[in-house]
Each structure stands twice: as structure tokens, then as C-alpha cells.
Length: 281
Length: 355
Image (cartoon, rainbow over all chains, first blue to last red; front, side):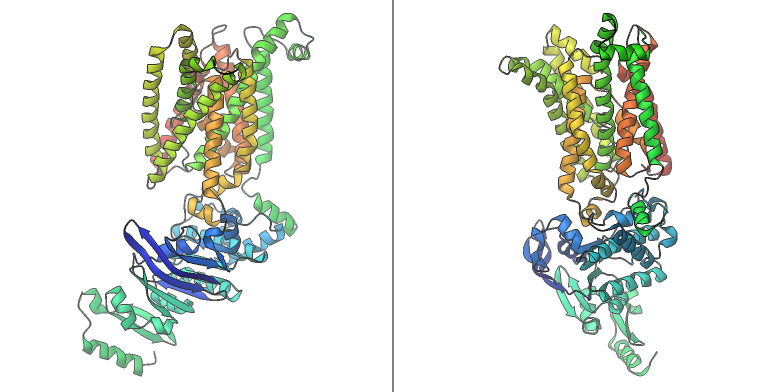
């Protein structure tokens, strides 16, 4: 289990994260949501071992992250950063092999790369150089690298965690779904996944557990049904939004009034409640 | 192909065809090395060169080969390998294909270090044994190069996005500062020191200090496995430092090793041959065109190409107007300068240079 308690990070006098507690269990998906600047990416960089927190402790399978070497970490977790480099002069297949630990058998390398590239739909582009790809393709190629590292480490008894920072942001709908499928598959094979998402509906769809950050603090945490409620989300995002249950799937959309800068009237709120209760869409 | 073979092929992917290119380059380097020993104001046939090397030549032949051309060849090997590897490593480290030890001031720093030893070291030479004095020059050059690399790295880390402009402007500033400092040293130097100093500003493979050549050759030889040990690190650096870290690279350590090796290699060869520009730019670029981007093959190819370029330039300046011998840096700059301009042009056209 990945367990972080009391994580605090300061930039100068300003606390970007304050006393954040979060746990990622193997086999489950934790989505971290929150407005821009709420500390999501900083939290991810602490939990990946990239940045030591100013206070608090993060334990990965019982070992403090600060005591693990980059190599140890790479054997336990894989990461997709928010804006991976695009000017990479290697093909997707070569890129996918680059993070794989040396001690893995050639067969293991091959299997991990094949599986990862298939998951991100990159087989046809596996020999195309990343710097000749579109933005979305390059992003998927990097996701393929992270997944290949995860599966390869998995074959060595590690590969227990996967961290993704905004993995769907630059992708079309089809590939967003493919990424979320890869996330669910990683969890079903025993990996603990932490994913930072802006799209609340996708977060509700993919996550077992949701952590809502607001100004560096945990504003709410729980199952999607517990966190994805207007009274929880509205104060944090500062706007009116609807949470609609579409065929058992929570869907979060901003209210039209929010576009016009008007507060949601109690009448409108009542109307939405009625719709939710009476209309099985 | 079996799955295991395919997997090995995948690990080495992007290196296809590199073997043949490396063999051809090596053959070219050997041919140039033979020419370096055979050609000059007195031309010798290859069998006379071999006889002289074996100690069976005439006195004149033996003197020419052993006293003049062999030290020259050995220094040329060291310069080519060191600048080829250092250029490749620096470009990988700074993630910028225009990083070149000479352009960005590393060579200048090494020169200043060496010149300082020549002018100011006199006070020390009485105090230290002679063999330490031989080391003083490379040490001074190493320290000078290391200081410049540290400054450049601090600047590059603070720069958002494209570092090219910053690196080139920093190079202009560093070269100006070093020029001024060398000017001061020239002003306070005596006649003998002035002769030695002039040697630095020219850059040449001609040297009378055989101990220094052997020392530089040994240092360069020692650095080769160190550079090669960083091939995975340099590959991963292309992904950015965060992704490299996520993939298991100790970025801080790799950075330190690469920067120190570069300073040491450039410092060593600059202390013996003076500043020789553009080899560290041209060799890695040609190597990329020939063998691709994986450092497993890129580093060896750049090293061998460095040898070829240095020896070809040396042969050119020696054979151009014999027996006069223009400085080798003239030849490397005549080829390297336009090459650099071409790279800049390509960069401004594409909006971002593909290394």
C-alpha cells in the first residue's frame, strides 16, 4: 500500500499542500480532482518520490519514499507526467523499452512492450518517431512507456503503482476511453493507480476512490457517490454544477447559469432534482 | 525470428545498420592515421613507416616517425575522441543539439585554466616535483572547463523552454570574459610565456611535450568507458529529466558524471593541443546522420568521426602550404563555422531543431 500522511509542501511561505493524507491500495484506482492550482500535480510529484515533502511522510509498501533510490522506485511504480517531451527522436517501441529495468529477460521485455503498445493503440505507430507524431499520439506513446515499465516491473514482482497526471487531456474521446480501460486493467492486475483528472465525469467513471483537493487541502474524500455531489463540488469549484445519474453513471456538468455568471436559483435547483428523480434517461 | 531475438532487436532498436557504418568509419580512421604518419614535407611509404616504427628505419625516418608524427597522431586521436564524446555528451546533457564545447565557452575556460598555469604556475613549479608540473597544465584546464560547465548548467536549469539562445549568448559572454582574462595574462607574461601563450590561441597538434601527450592520451582513454557507461543515461535524458528520473535514472549523479567527464576530457586535450573548435559540433551531428540517436552507437561513432575530422584537418593544414603549417583550428573553423550557420538556419526554418 502507498500511504501518505500529513504531506505538506511549501513554495516559500505559501503552502501548496497542507496536511494531506492519501492512500493508494493495490488493485484500486484513486482519482485526485480539484481546481487548477489546488496542488494535484505537486501531490503526485511527492508520491512518485520526485520531491521530498517539507513535512509528513509517504510510505510505499512500508518503506519511506525518501529512502528509496530512483532505481528502486522505478521497479515499483511507473509515471506519466502531464507534459511529456515531444522532441524525442526515438520510435514508440524504442521509447517503451527505455524505462524497463535491465534485469528483465528479453522475453519479458517483449511481452511488456507488446502489451503496453496494444493498450494505447500504438501498434501501427510503433516504428514511428515520437517527434514526428501529433500531440495526442506522442502522449499515448509516453503512456505506452509508463505502462511497459509497469508491466515489466510487474514481471519482476514489482510494478505495484501507476501514476498518471492528466492522461486524457490531449486525447480524443476514443483514446480517453482506451486510457481509462488501461487504468482499470492495471488495477485489475493488482496495481494501485493514482490518476489526476480534470474531467469529473471520467473521474467518477474510473475511480474507486476520489480525493478532492482545494487550496492544498483535502476538501473531501470517498467513493464517487460520496464526493460527486453538488454541495461538495460547488464550493470548491466556485460555480453551479449538475450531477446527473445517466444509466448508473455519475455525470458532472456545469450549470448554464455558471456560464452567465449567475448563481443557481433555488427554483432551478429544484427542477434539476425533479429531473434526477423522475427521468430515467 | 524467435521472441528472444526480437526482444534483443527491440532493445537495440534504432541502432540498425550502425554496425556497418562503424566499421566503415573505423577503416577511414585507420587510413587517415596511416596518412598522418606517412605524409608531410618528407613523404614516406607505408612500409618505411612500419620499418621506422619497428626500429629498422634510417635515422631520419625514425626521427620523423617517432619524434614528430607519432606524438602528433596520438594527440590527434585523443583530441578527436575527447571532443567527439564531449560534444555528444554535452548536447545530450543540455538537451540542445547546438551545445559545443568551443561555442559555449568550455574550451575557453579550459584555455584560461591552462594559460593561468603557464603564466602564474611558475611560482609553483619550484615548489613541486617535475612530474607534478606536467599535471598542472591539464589540471588547470580541467578546473577552467569545469567552472564554465557549472555556470552554464546553472543558467540552463533556470531557463524555461529552448536553451539555445541562452547557451549561445552565455558562450559569447564567457568567451569575452576569458579573452579579457587571457589579455591580462598576456600583458603580465614574459617572453617565454608569451610564446607558450600564442600556442594556445592557435591550437595545434604539434607538440614537443611527449609526456603531456601520453598523459592526455591516458586521460582520454580513461574517460572513454566513463562516457560509454552513461549511454542509457543520455538516451533517457532525451525524454526530459523528470521522465528520466521516473524511468529509474539517478539524474543528479548522471549529470555530475557527464559534466565532470566533459570538463576533464576537454580540459585534457585543450591543455595539450589548445582550443580546437567545432569538432564537438560536427562529429556528433554527422554521427547522428549515420547511425541514429541511440547513444550505444552514437557515442562510438562520434568518437571515431572526431578522430577522422581531426586527422583530416591536420593533414589539410600540413599539406596545404608545406613546409609552413597553419594552425589546425583554421581548418576546423572553416568547415565548422558554415556547418553551425547551416544548423541555425535549419533551426529557424523548422522552429525547432531536430537533433
